[in-house]
Length: 231
Image 1 (cartoon, rainbow, N blue to C red):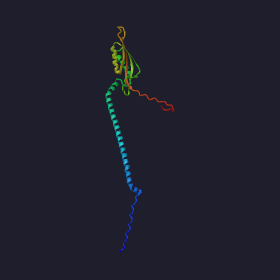
Image 2: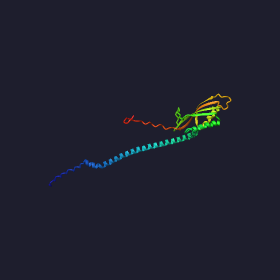
Image 3: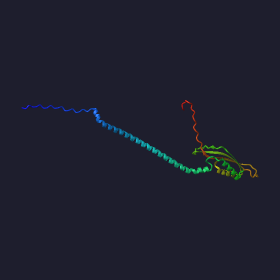
Image 4: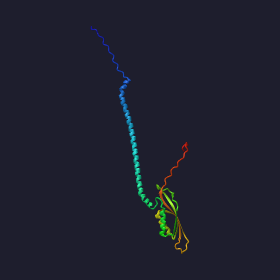
């Protein structure tokens, strides 16, 4: 009989290679770097988007303010144009009457003398007080102007009442005035006195003008003691 050969002994299977942490890191390094770069890019894009949105809102707000300022300026210009068209004729008329600017006392006096000579008034004398600012009971918007007035006292010897009204009417050509009061008194004269005044009249006139308003007073400087605490 043939001798039976013993079966060959099996070789043990080779153990699978063990994975280490460093090997895993090397394997995952590229995906991790790509993911990190993508994350940073996403953060930058989000930040840039927010900045661009805020910048757009800021530019929109600036444009809105510029538009509102231009619209307000246009409305003011239109309103000023309407006011000029409305008030310029009145202003020019007041200036022609001597109401605007420096008062013209010489024109008042010349008008009195011409009226006395033309209308043959017997006697006219006057007194003019210094000009003063007028304080109104209710405020009036005068812009850069101030209302001023000069008081004139008129003393007249008249033949009849019409002489007084004629003189007052002549004075209106010399400026704008108001009659504060007039007192008329009949005089005792002989009947045969042809050129003697029969009446005496005393009138108080206020000549009004619009002059440039004085600048507001500068604030008083505060004197401080060196080293002292501020108030």
